[in-house]
Length: 94
Image (cartoon, rainbow, N blue to C red; front, top):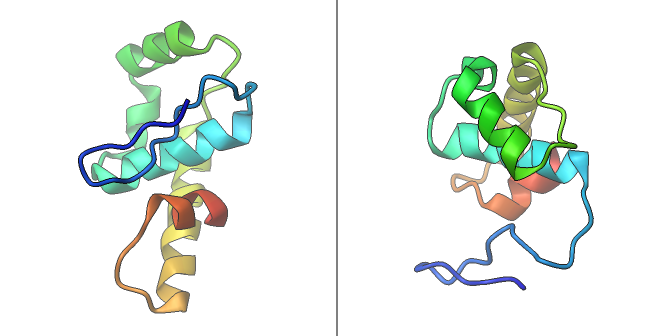
């Protein structure tokens, strides 16, 4: 079931969705961009352990892959010349 956060934005969690590697990867790119985390975050032991617990089927992408995804998302956004980045646009662009 989708829920709303304090900004009335729908979160990415849904009880009825099947596992989808790409959706999780796009959400990871959003996490890194929005929270300004380094791409090396995906190499940290704590993050990898967290991913195993949350969804053991998720294959954590490499730092190089995440870096390309982030740059691609940011570049696409710049080309559109829209100042604000929303979660939906990030998910669609990766």
